[in-house]
Image (cartoon, rainbow, N blue to C red; front, side):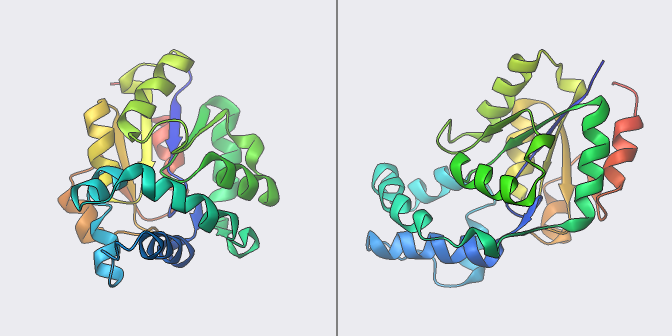
Length: 210
């Protein structure tokens, strides 16, 4: 049976921290809710689901998403670069498994970047914020869509919030240390697997189902 690998976009596939942080701060300034003053404030928003986090801080979600459309349209996608060591791993994984992107970013942005980098063909589906806000719900949707069980599904993320949402969905949690949150922050979230190099994903592919 094929395994289902669900990948976060920002911080896992793409090195986009500064671009994404700047875009979020611009959106918040546009709606006059500058709740992010520094990098630490920004990182705190990803200890849980990003959208739930900003709502808890008094942000109207519809107002934020409306403001984000204009900001996102101005992003220079050519500035977004992949984590190059991951690319050959993705091509190897897709040969015998199903790969899907699940992200808090917009599907349009993800598709444009992946298409420019020419590895959009690795993924069966892109589930962004325009599909659902909850990553745990998107994980469940992907499992139903591709008829896979929890024990053969892996969510690969780079924040404590990713780990938490994947745990809610009941799938295997994989945290990568090349992304946004520090190793210490990820360890505190207790992922099933904590990896430092993309090729370690290939080891997960060889593990038997639980």
